[in-house]
Amino acid sequence: MPAFLVELAFYLASGFPAVRKKFDALGPASLRAALLSASAVLPYLMETSRTGTFDAVHFLELTGVVLIAAFWYACVPRGLPWDLLFLGFMAAVYLSRPFDRIYGHAAPHVALGILGQLMWIRVGLMAVLSLRPLEDARFGFVPSRHEWLVGVQHYLYFLPVGAALGYWERFARFHLQTMDWWKFALLLVATFAGILWVVALAEEFFFRAFLQQVLARRLHSETFGLLAASVLFGLAHLPFRKFPNWRVAIIAGVLGLFCGLALIKARSVKASMVTHALVVTTWRMFFTT
Image (tube, rainbow, N blue to C red; front, side):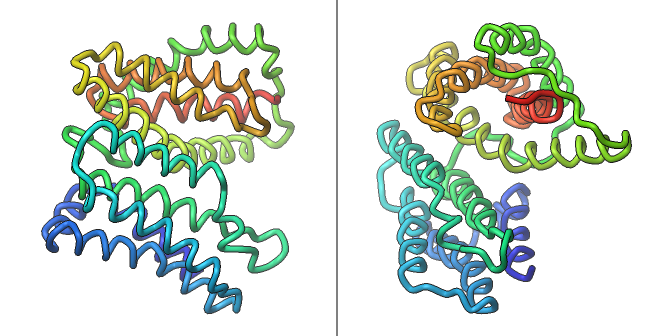
């Protein structure tokens, strides 16, 4: 619990511009990268010291990937090839799921990999926002009224397209969970919040706020940035549950188009986060695959 609370504090801090501004004022990029690295391994040391599960090999593995991510933009020149390599590295580490192994299980059925997943997301966020930096990201946790409206609008646009794709691919079937209505309502809200502030936050930041806008500016075409980021977003879902999972990749790529359009209209990643979270929540709560 202490390790989780510390990690949660670091994770939430990345979403506040005032906190990021103070972090930026601490010193040169190399110092900020070092502080970011230290904050990344601190929860691991707290958790493993209290549970007696510290492993030197796991610690070195964790430290190695953290140092690469944290010092990337403190060491390399700014440019599209380096941005693509950074995103590829971040995705490769995340998809290989090393944190379940590194953080281990403190007790049966208590997997602590979530600590590493949260850490990896916010280290990547801060590396881009503080050390790169990224213009006009408008990143944060709480969407404005306009961002909610745009996000919901593009969610509704996606629904008939997603339903047609799901039917054509035989991807999922309608399945309403059997439980008391108030339990269902609580689960619905909790599922949406978790997806909005973890899954959608991470994927929309890296694929839309970062990749889509970097490609659009470099190639002077919002259309190309939208299409390229959506294709890559779909391909990133190929390992979902099995490889290659083309059904999920196709639906994810199409969802990427609608999320990207929400970003363009609202000029904010928080709108695309809303679209993404609503779609995934609908799928998890009302369908089964």
